[in-house]
Image 1 (cartoon, rainbow, N blue to C red):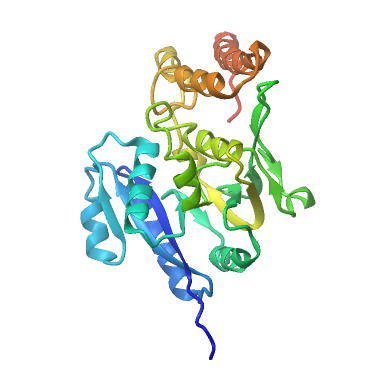
Image 2 (cartoon, rainbow, N blue to C red):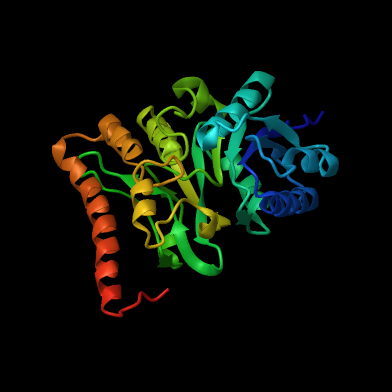
Length: 306
């Protein structure tokens, strides 16, 4: 008698705040791919964590996608809090095997989920899987092939960042941390290390902190080149736009990837020695230097090429 194999259950988590048009496109694409493809090993449930949107996001989803689970936030979750709410729901249900981190402004390749389904039987039960991420609008420009961090030198970066795709990114690679999009996390990781640190990393570095913490706890992080997604970089973070007040805002705003408290917290947790802080100081020196450089040049009529 042939025993029917049970599919692994995946809770695909999509934290959102307004930007309903992105959510419409996202759910439309996911519905198309997951309905069209016959997956042998995985079964997905889409979970949208709506952090107090004022544009009718939750009502629209309930009216158009009855199978999508909508969890309601109060506007104070940010990214890590939203992921925590979705992950806690999956844990409480008791029958999920993975959570998958997703954004409403990314686009997966048409074969993304079949490629993931094909991978599952051959990977370790406790491995965290990452995707090969490209820049939206530049089909062959890699944005991330996994992250690296050296606790002694303090260097933290993404492999492949702004490099043209090549054979260098055609084989699976181990990573120290992974971005919070297209990342498959076994629930065993959450059981062992806990949830995302929404207190210290509410928006940025929540992904790198969690996955690096998982690596330190003994879990392997792998990036697979066949898992291809495109990231909309125009919809990410604050920019100073040549304005000094906005430049100062970058150092303290939760929506800023240059929030100094967030960076200092990461380095305090994981760096080894004072020298590890040098790359961090360099980042802020470059940010300030670049701002004033172009201010001076613009005074002499030199404009920056966009």
